Length: 519
Image 1 (cartoon, rainbow, N blue to C red):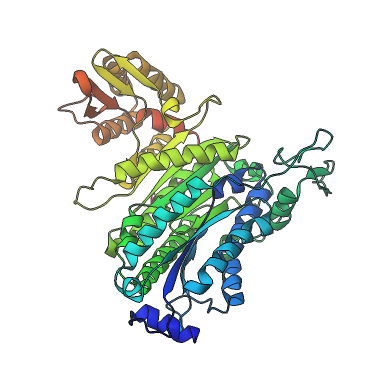
Image 2: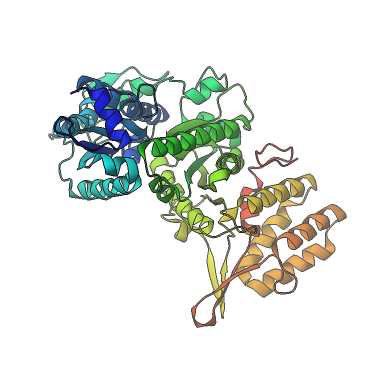
């Protein structure tokens, strides 16, 4: 069988003959990617784990296709190949049915063989040329259901026996030590398992494509180097496209699916690069891109740059995909650099879901919106975003000391007002006094705000006046509160951006450091 002719016939939807083998869709997806990447807190290990998975997704799958005698290019290449999609740990490929099952087994072996711990799930869907060429989106939807079912039925995971006399890896603390790595300067050698040693070897000093694009020669060795630029705090930014799953499934052919995935990938990469360019590049590299896969991005930046970068990233993506009316949302966590990143990523994922719920509505012009939700983490006992946001019940009013999720326009206004308040020299004592007054209830805090507004200096008064005009409707509300929604039993919910403004105040500069286009 001429494989190139078979592929072209399958893509064109030509009827099967006795000499033409039916096609099959091979769908694979890496299992628990973030668990593998963030199981160790060291930045080199996270960077190395991400690089390992990217190499397996980009190169490992191509090698397996080539070994099976199949063209490893994409369906829109010249000549076309079997790959429809390959990004973010996910793979879609069209292969002859006779080669599908051996390839499935080879792909599922590939990840644990190369990494020792990461795994992937792969399924095979038998199909027809007619379905491939006319109903490809429906086929991909079926593949997604099959993948989720297969993942849920998995019981066997890589197992490492730990005998009582075996020392544990100093990084993951769950696998046996196999070697001692050379120490960092001034530190003793570190016992490491095979998996963590490979991650560190892959990630130590590795420059990502983003560092190369920006001309950065040295990458940060740990999170402390990033946090040095923002009072010991880092910002974890987790961004993802809104509604892209349904949009991809509207593609009727593999070529259309490939075109859409390529456009999204280019939009994400361009948006990320533009966002990173807004960070003031100093002698030490101030950021680390951990994951870029498909339409999602996870990166770590200095705390003061986190929200501006999230704003720029979502805004640039929305501009690039405006013709398709696609937007992006983000969750941002600001915390001390010694906070475990796997915990920060989980909080960022919760915030991202919150932002996506806001983005599910429509903007003032009737179109889709981008949204950002954030949390400044100060209490180490926080376990969820619901636990982090202070909520006060006073009679028939529910007061939430947080305003998010923010649309990009709202976030830009908030960041602008922080800068103007700092430029006006607004006293920090009054800033925090007003925040404390929020806990007294809506009426007491509103009186405190109006009192401070009346007695403030001209510059400080202008700052408070602008805040009141921006966030409160004088007909229905008194600043600093904004009516949100009516709940059950007649309870009315109010939110305030004042607490958010205070939380961000110390991380923002008055000189226009951010990426939101603020002077």
